[in-house]
Length: 215
Picture 1 (cartoon, rainbow, N blue to C red):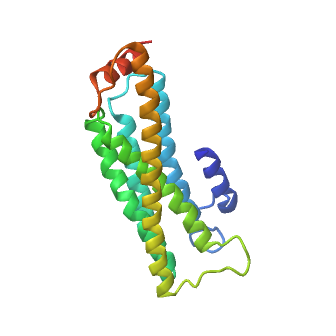
Picture 2 (tube, rainbow, N blue to C red):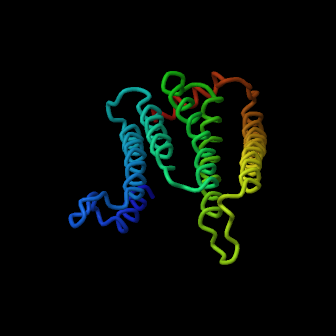
């Protein structure tokens, strides 16, 4: 998907950074998006190396993902010049999600054996995804005649509230997923005659993970 994203961005930019006729930069927004995709592609490459058991440094997957999120946040931060108030506000809310993703994923590099950091990372990733969809519907409405007033203060207030709804929805979704997975796993553990421990990561779960890596 990342490679497809790069290709589609450059189908518009035609792999031209500087227009030879004018000497000006050519569709820099697409080049910014391509740069973001490139760093996430680097993270995917590291994931492949780990899956192939290549001799790579421990935690490189989390480190490169944190780097990719940092680049994403940096480029979005300088993506706002000359835009309308609502457009800027939508992107600023997105940056508020990206920053915790950078921090949490970076912490996972040194502390991968905890359930809390991956859960926060998953929540942040989902929030980025749902908010990007929301931003698309706000800035590029798919239905004619339903355009947003991009200078309206009331619209900015509503968008802030909608962002909070996204957070609440994701938290509820994760609670449902956790509950379902917990009961399924607990039922399997009872069949084995063991009890499921609750904690950062139980010793049984760590042993199971270690055994799966050795298979």
